[in-house]
Amino acid sequence: MSERGEPRDRGRARSGGDGERRRDPRRDAQGRERNRGGAAPRRFSEQAPSQRSRAADPARLVAFEVLRAVSRDDAYANLVLPQRIRHHRLDRRDAGFATELAYGALRGQGTYDAILALNVDRPLGQLDPAVLDVLRLGTHQLLGMRVPPHAALNQTVALTRAVVGAGPASLVNAVLRRVSEKELDEWLAELESAQPDATERDALRYSHPGWIVRALRQSLAAHGRGADEISDLLEADNAAPVVNLVALPGIGTLDEALEGGARTGDLVEGSALSGGGDLGRWSAVRDGTLRVQDVGSQLVARAVAAAPLDEPPQDSGRRPERWLDLCAGPGGKAALLGALAAERGATLFANEVLPHRAELVRKALHPVPADAWEVHTGDGRTLGTEHPGQFDRVIADVPCTGLGALRRRPESRWRRSPNDLAELGPLQRALLESAIDATAPGGVVGYVTCSPHPAETTVVVADALRRRDDIELLDAGAALDAVALHPLGAGHDGTAQLWPHIHATDAMFLALFRKLPAATRLADRRR
Ligand SMILES: C[S@@+](CC[C@H](N)C(=O)[O-])C[C@H]1O[C@@H](n2cnc3c(N)ncnc32)[C@H](O)[C@@H]1O
Image (cartoon, rainbow, N blue to C red; front, side, top):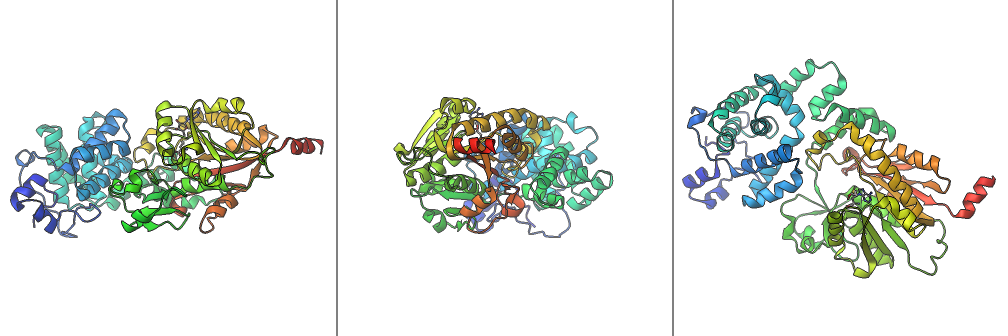
């Protein structure tokens, strides 16, 4: 049996080039290494690590560079990965393999580190961080990717020799041999049997920090769902999300994507789901009329755009509607809202505090007719006093922990801490306050997060309702259903929460408020 996953250079030398690779590719269409061995006994190279190839497989090298950038430079995997893929000129299959390897190793880090700790003779913190990253990559290949063990081991040793040196290659070889002696479930059973706490057992099995497991369980309960859904939710966080696309209404079409193999989205109009690959192959993506955007984000933006205004705002008979996106960067929802506004003769004022992100908003809005939008760089917290009561529709998509989008950002679960919740709370409240101030009587405000955590969602909403007498809560679940292609069942106590394990979207939260006309407030007070 040939050794799968061997360095591309060696494969080329033997096979005489890419033609051979096409006839007998090492990887399937999803970029997974073929496991022709199936249940065959594990075989390792008889050579000592020091005698094996020094050449690293380019796909594994890319994955290694991603993990290094993440752990050494605090980089974002989703930004580094495409850069490294381009740099090493990986073909589609190798790019798929590198993506699965890097993202899987990052997501699985909690589980893999616990397994590695059983097999390394010193605390993991005492290892060279580059060696630890290599071990994580090797472990994911062995336990998470069905790469044949001898290929996973030989290739990871070759990678170690190429990027760290010959010395650590022996350690990597020895540790990964031990890791390969059991299947993932056997390792998990061993780890779990030593862990009396149920939350920590979930944390080990689903590779999440314990505090996030607790936070998500609490979030499920806060939004009226069963705590027993936690394992489905954690599992959904570990699945690679399908790429969601949106065609800007009235501007773009899904045609190219659908012709290119994407399928029509079944949750919201104008959306499609794609298996991935280089989306830049479609001209509509290049010109920004077809955009990558989570369906949950599409739904909340459309719901804010469609929510009925209570009565025509005082002067709405005389002027077109004005819309405000208070926290617009990098511009995903702004682009969709801008296109919807243009269709309806409304205008969008998109605000973002960071200049470089405001520039991204401009870029996102570029395909939308220029007279329909304006981008402003400023602190959203003061916008309400600068433009009091001026907007008919306002969206406050506030900075949050992102606990609802963990599947898209594989490293973020390890970066977040419970302190983030405390730090973000005052900013979220101030932005919502400002959004309400900026809303015209009779207008609507959408408060949005990509986190289901009650501290960022229901508690912020309850505080606003307690503090102010000029707002009422609208039924956000009904507002989502009004723009969805079928009922979502996302509403609970007036607010709405989408879930990865139920709706296959990010866990977007939406609360919709109506700004009450002054007369209503007066009448209420008299009552
Ligand atoms: C969750 S993101 C918004 C995502 C965006 N709506 C989209 O769909 O692409 C939150 C944004 O708020 C911005 N932000 C943070 N503090 C802000 C403030 N005080 N005023 C306005 N924007 C702020 C962040 O820079 C970030 O771009």
